[in-house]
Length: 388
Image: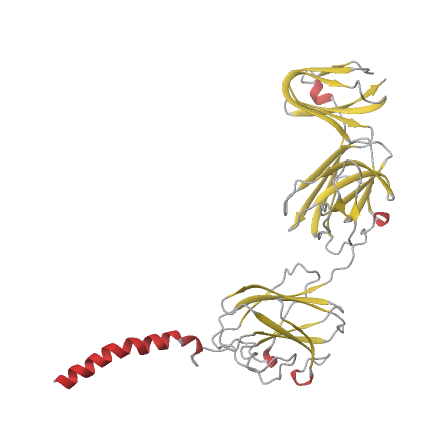
């Protein structure tokens, strides 16, 4: 009886320990299959992106991965590459970027070895092309049409990896055709709407007194029609800004700019155009002294006829014109905003209020033509003023 009791107690004590050990090592259990791309012969095909945005990614895992028979190279031992998985892509350019992202689990220190398998893509006839400990590798001197294998593994020799990740192949985008001011895209009719990719815009800075400093992004031109021009930029995943200039590509005069600041925020630059005047529009990163990267964006440009009819209907009037000193304005509804523009469309002064009367002092302004834009209630209108 005593012996049976002892055996029962031993089973009661040891069974949980055995079960716990089994549970803790179940990740290495032979009952769980390795990843489908555990060997080179079953490498997963990667979609090659046409830029560095990595829209197309492929998920991967090292969980249950086993060592491959192919010698790693790059001074890496077989023990270090004991949890490798394989991917492949066909080069469409002489340069590609391979990036690992969203790395999770354990361990997170991953390593990549790249092999050139030629046009045949055979695992048995490939040579080491490059190695990368960082999660991003810039591959150069590639042969277009050749198949390249990517071997991903953790550098640790310990078994039981649970690592998951995304992998993508990017391509250095082509420099935009309107990368330089001299090759700006002409906007010849309104409304205008199109999408662009400024990812590969070259570096440099655009400075003009009165406007923020921008990267030398991508360029557009339009010829003023005497109306109010609205330039709207909707960026995808980057911080965009707008600069509007007159003059020439070698000597800019600032007209208007826009920089709300923030990734993906819409930017809007508005100005009163002068008929026949050429305007240069730069869409770029608001650099200051930093050469930041541009990206994709949608551009919308509209032209609105300058008219005063809608605010006259609200009792709006102004005098005198021409003016030497103060321009006086009144309306039967609150005048909410008054903006004064130069003949080039640059905003000189802005008054925000909510009164039936408003004044603009021209005393210190040079003689010439100006535009005034008034908002009365929910309507706006523009008119020309001559300063003697």
